[in-house]
Length: 477
Image (cartoon, rainbow, N blue to C red):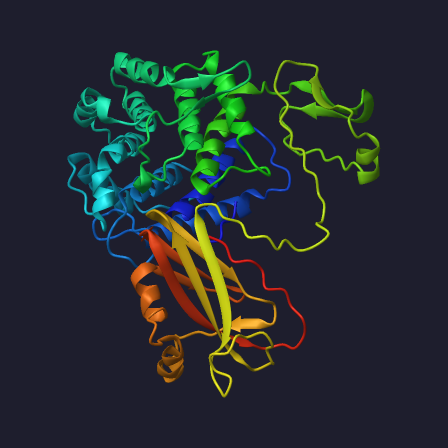
């Protein structure tokens, strides 16, 4: 998995699935995946996480920051601990020792944080810290007992993490069973699938709460505690159904779902089992392929659009014969829109962008016509009706533009002056609202750990470098 941003959350989200692939490699062939390439990418993710370790032992949200992020420390810590148990990966012992001490500070309620809102949600982070400590070989049984006794204040996902912590620490089975029973009482189930959804209106922002992640944690806990529970296959089906375009909504959903499903694959497929996959359209066979449980090579079928249109209204069937194991498949419909989308989309944010000439006799004019060499000021205005957390504003540039860097002292003053106008919506406004920026060859990306309700504007400069006609791709939040 490759994600566009390098924060602790996305770095961990890209590394944990690689560690899961490493575990699968021992029992299954992984076609198209070079084990050494997996190891190198996983080590790169681990090294980046280590670069975020602060004086406290916890991990910051971005490299170079001095304050740790509690949930990010437990989440990234999970990757570090798993990697430390993986042959071929290097995690310094002192890094794990320092991480353990910060996780203990979380359990004591004394962990250093950058924001008060993060500190207010430490109760939901404590079970995760306890789980990672247990996985690292340093469980804290007394804290586990205290958390169990105070479980009424925990959300369901934290109860599941506590159950995993107690199970890993070989604690009281009755406590594990009680936690799992209380969570299972909240599961929404039908004949096909079962999901775990929030029971109240509270959203644990600092933990990046989600129903998919909670459902994946339920699957992981059932696999450890009740592997034959009839609910488990339904929970796994819900995870598969939650994908959109072959993936889940966000990086944590991806990571936890892959961890849960990879463990399922290891335990559900009998070595050497044979079966057959078939695809039928309107009852007519269009594809058949023999399958072996130890061969994970994907089988691909391309159905021409003419056949799809001719079969309009008929049922497409995908089935597996030969054994009772599930068949995992993805259906994709590829098409090109007849014209570029022009309608505005509003999903909780409003985003407006304008291009203006930044210098010369036309300075301040709308950049409706641009010549090669023109300096362009790009203004992005973001409006939200409520406080939002972990916001990314991603603005692709037209192919004929290049962003201007302000990193060179010789040009910085003059260029900043073009951004710092009387309306106070330039670079300094940007620095107050957005705490991290990435300038790439083809886009500018700005991040806000917390964005208050209202309007927020930032600006940057770009140079028109190439003559021609180009599309300005839509900016997005």
